[in-house]
Image 1 (cartoon, one colour):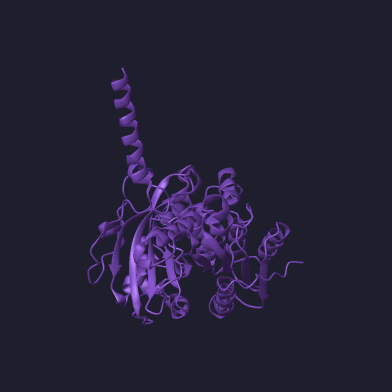
Image 2: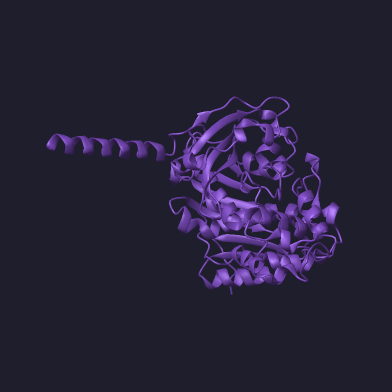
Length: 415
């Protein structure tokens, strides 16, 4: 009987050892060859094929599943000397399920030999297709925000730019995006060629517009989802606080395509929405058409919802007078509203008072809420529109993040 008990204990020990191996962050890293020239679209590229949910569930969030070095011509629009890799890593979606995501690590030649610092840069790619995923755009050289990323690289920062919408392109889905950013940081820290110091690595996060969704959600989820990280500060501009309020503001105007694209993305992420019952024939055609669109990524050649749906009313596509009043839609909007959790790191928020998309009152209220929660908020509220501020506002945002990395005490203008 003792011998039988010992066999059982030995078996249990083996299972425990196997589980520990599977959950170790570096256990599953698989090297892939560099992408061909020209690169394959993600839908035709095996690198983007997700492992099974069972396999993903066997490893912890942030585990690097596979990696490949990409050609330095990824920077052909704004040449930068350095190395770059695509990583596939394990994350968690908005339903709590394990999912795979892809991100890009950029390592400049001037990065210090030791004590490297990391920026998570969230591109505003606002897409319903992987054709506009940052990882693919970096390889093609079509990422519009490479000029801003270059600022970080010139200053010796390692950059992780996650495809935070995930392999299903879940634009506007907050939990999914926030998890994707935090797990992208974990993946970069677990990737030895990046030369980072694990969880002690000083990290900053930034993003504008769609990228600000990812940045702010990552900050609100930081302490509960990835408290081991050393996030020093977050800078976010053109902030989308409440998707319903944005929809009401743009419906029927030039920016109506933002509403239409976001609805298509949310429908993809929330199958509980009865699309067949809520849309008429025109609406069904609209949703199908939107699946190949990206907002503002004209270098990719992908169709843009702004051009396709400008000045249209959502009510002309639905069987209900007001889509935003449907209970399941109201619930989804509530789930994706910022301000439900206190941010874990100091934050710099910059917003234009004449932003065509984002209601300034919503951003004011979010800042007030953060301040009331004891968060150190530096709020820059200037006379600017959405597009202009994306470019002109980055300099101060980057300076704020540099100060956080240099351990300058975080400022606040909370009243």
